[in-house]
Image 1 (spheres, helix red, strand yellow):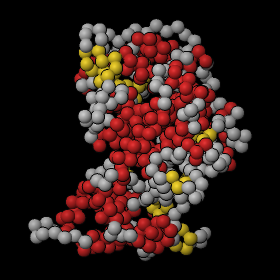
Image 2 (cartoon, helix red, strand yellow):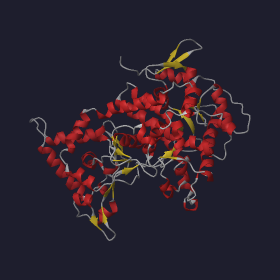
Image 3 (cartoon, helix red, strand yellow):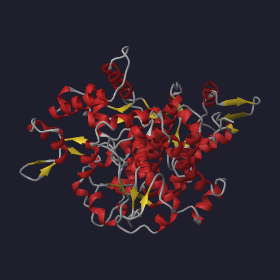
Length: 538
């Protein structure tokens, strides 16, 4: 038994030798940063897309007919914009000197000269000052820089004009050929092997397909919108019938409004890119369409939850920068949930009775405040994360998930962990959901940002629900246990085949945190309501 895929790319089996990829899809990877999951998702969402050559899919998701008639062994192709000239202008000046090839500096100087010719200014502000201000402005929207070459850096996706595909500079080959021009770097130079381009656009080194998986999960969800399985899920957990369809509609409408309308930053980008039309042409001439991977077909269940949460955040009337941050959290939590959900389905260390103790997807995350003095409770929380990792390990070791062609002798165990349990801990620490960042004793914790995300994602904008309903929804969506019966279930999930007695924390820490964040409305000593205040302006 191998895991059914959407789309069915069975001819790519040999590319998916890693058991963690065969479990979760192609692919979640440790080196992809949290913002790049959202950027890659938006890149696929906004770019022209194709399943069949003559039928272009614009912004959003394919229609139901396209999804239902998807040919076997046919990946989704999309055409991203690399925005190489924009990155050159914004990031070259702040990049490391050793990453700047002479052709980069020459092109930058040509670009600056052209831009100066296009500027009209009065005597109080020089053209150099204007360009310096523009460079500083764009540099303020950097999402990922670290030690990367300028062209590999990533903008925060605060407008469509700042959403760009991955570009890799072949630094070693460039150092061997210091005399080549910018155009030659894009068109390619003759080496002993072949004509080699020094810029590549299809490596998936940093945008490692994680955002593609999230997009494909929502496409896959469309296949189940009228299914008895989804109807049963909605009935069991009191979701309104048709809420999955409405969530996808909301995502399409809100992202269209957020990114397609002309904003000042988009106008600046258009003005800058108009100064160098030749670079986009050379990029297009030498580039193939990007090809998406696949997701597990059964991931429609967690995609249904992801769609509800993503739609709620899209609708929230919050600052655009905060919306980008919360959508990033939404993507990261979907990666964490997807790994755990698949692990529960296939782990060899799980029994059906244990799966019943978790949330909708059968796992439990025992959540504590960041500052916790209760030693016994803290030990249980630490063991909960250990148990989560055990379950994931038990899934990637299951031979039932592997295709017949898989040769696990050629894959190192560290590479399997990098795509599964190590990724979960790494991402959890990056967003403050797992602490401490270094050292032993890691556990799931509730930070201020995680709490804010949960309210925005789980409570419809402008609406209220009881505190008990909110904690129920936390447990249902993510298996997050903070109190009462959820906490007892999580403890028994953590220690299988044992009767565990766990004492409640003595303080109402979640209520205090919600009250401090402005999300709690105390109605009486016994009843409180959680409110998402960011509804429609009216």
